[in-house]
Image (cartoon, rainbow, N blue to C red; front, side, top):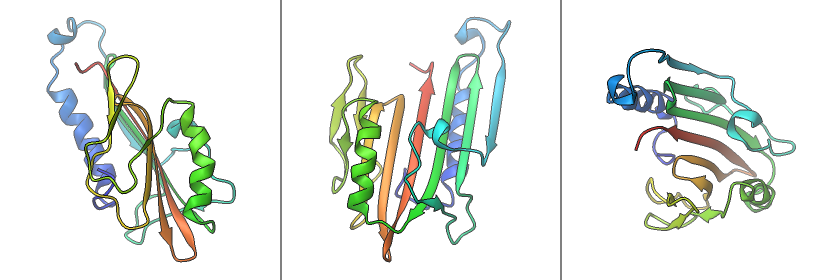
Length: 179
C-alpha cells in the first residue's frame, strides 16, 4: 500500500473506508437505533493523529504532484470503521539516524517489524492473536520500513534517502469492529 503512487494513497484510503462500511448493514451491527455515520477527511494530521513524534528539524513535505503534507481520513459507523492518518516530512539527516530516532517511539506499541528488504511473508503476532505483516510489495532501494502494533492498530514509519537527506512517512491505520 505504501509503495504505490503516493498521489492516490489518500483517495484509496477514503474509498476503502467507504466500501468497508458499505458492506456492513445496521441490523448486522445490532439494530438501526442510535448508530451514527461519520465520514471525513482533512489535512490536519500531526503527532497526535499518527501516534509518533515529528523528527527534530524535519519539515512538512509536499510531493511534486501537489499532495498535501498530511492527511487524516476516517469512516465510522457506530463503533465500526477505519481511520488513516499520514504525515509526510523531509529532513537533512540520513535514513539511519532517523531510524534510530523512531525505533524507541515505535517500541511503545510492541515489537517492531522491520520490513526493509522484505517483499512479503514476514509477520509478528501480538498477544491477542492478531498479526502484523510486511506487505505491499518490495521496498525501493535504500528504503527503510518499520511497523509496530497490530493488524488493526498499526503504526508505520517509512524512510527513503533523497539527495543529501531523507523523506519520512509516518502512518497510523486503525480498523475497528470488522471481524
